[in-house]
Amino acid sequence: MAAGGLITQRSNFGPKETMNRLEAEVLVRGMTVFAHVDHAAGAAAVGLLLRPTDLLIFGAARGGTPLMQSVQTIGIDLPLKALVWQDEAGATFLSYNDPAFLAHRHGLGEEAKSVVEAMSGALKVIAAKATTPP
Image (cartoon, rainbow, N blue to C red):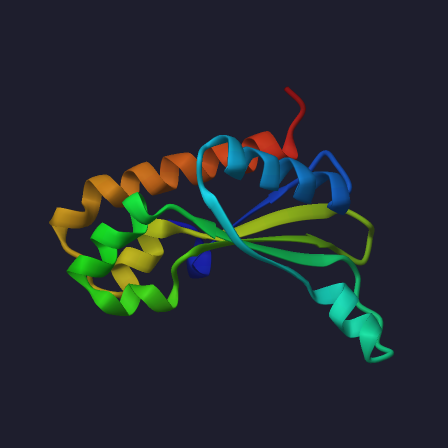
């Protein structure tokens, strides 16, 4: 489990390409993109500066619904989210919530283990494809 429930990995690409690769991989896997939140654009709209900080909200009902059937409060953390951001040195990162952390947070039991493991595996692959060359 990641510290604080957040998994972060450095990208070999800039913020825009990392986000494009992330979104493409999510769609290839048949998941739904629910929203794309460009925090930097929001900041700019009110005259504030923010390094690239871009959130993708996505998921699949087949994965999330069984978890919500078990403990509905996990719906506050679903659908899944991934944040592409750039630090002060110009490095790009991708961060997402560890599904095992979310399961623990909401008290999901053993019955959810296979779904959580599948979700964790899918996110790991999606993140790798978004941040590393083929």
